[in-house]
Length: 472
Image 1: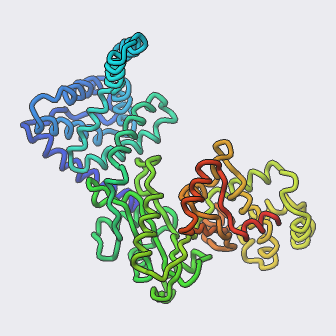
Image 2 (image 1 turned 135 degrees about the horizontal axis):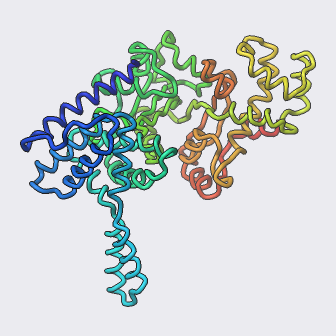
Image 3 (image 1 turned 90 degrees about the horizontal axis):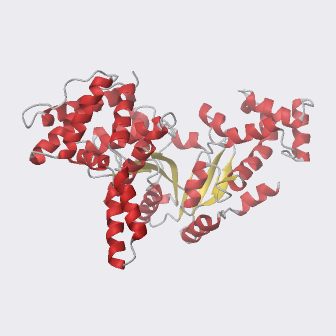
């Protein structure tokens, strides 16, 4: 069992214990033990319990007890049983369609202003599904919000095979969106003195550059580094999103150098650059609920107050989709993918292999980076193609960058500043981007204008060196 799985199992065990005591608080647990796969007989008993939760008889203590018993029942099920639980919630506790149809008809017939307002109110009420009230009851339980966040993560994984769960997922997303409004979130600096629970979660959730144990984590929290995270008051030990920052005398261009635990401690008094080198959305169940842009702006504000001399705010970011995109172009045999000069260089170093074929074959070789002449010949075409990928390959009708990390930073008002050669030589870095990384620059004077241009028209802000790369 991995450390993440061990932590998850520990959390579930603790949650079951907490909710067991609450479920018994009004005299007895309400749901008999269920078979893990939730067969039809158990499903029928479960439906009765859900209806009892909605009836809300017996006051607040009884309501919490029933919700806790229902939550414990969900946690006791297998993956198949949880899917059946969710399908019951989606199918049997949606809006009353007869009431919706009647309300819609009344709205269509309303002529006077007062009658129309009443019909609109009735339609809004009719469209609100009973399951929303049931889900809201978990908010009153300890760890109930985290439970719903994890439930949505599971729903998102099930929807491909169970499209009938989409409405339930949308209801839950709407609920979480209102609860996780940025105004409710708390920005905290995470330090070596933070709680062990938070530090363990940071290690578990770091997905960009894995943390190699406690020594590595301590290095990332040293005096020349900063780590900030958003927290929700109902999930105080669960970072929602966090960013790791290095304080440097210049813009970084290599992640291995940045993460080297043997590197000397930097002098923060001489730092004029803050490099955001890892941004992690820690809760999959909050996907699509955006607060990453607020995080960066808040961190820039905090750093600007703490270090008056820091004027440059930039990232050192991966290019996660580059190799996948490039491999697609090579497989299709796109004409003109390489320039004549690039064709000549590759032909020379590969002994005459065809240009596109040689590029595809060379990138498939695990040790191409160890050959200086070969690496030199590949630097030009790969950095140019990466510039093209980041700035010209789009989705959503040309309104958004194809690369998800580029889209995130461009949406926040950053500029594509510099592409760095051999910047991430880890196996993952070579596999996803041929070792390339990119700096996105947050110029404080241009952030709003860049954001508006990109959001409104899809126009990207790019530096002069990127424009030169694109010209070849």
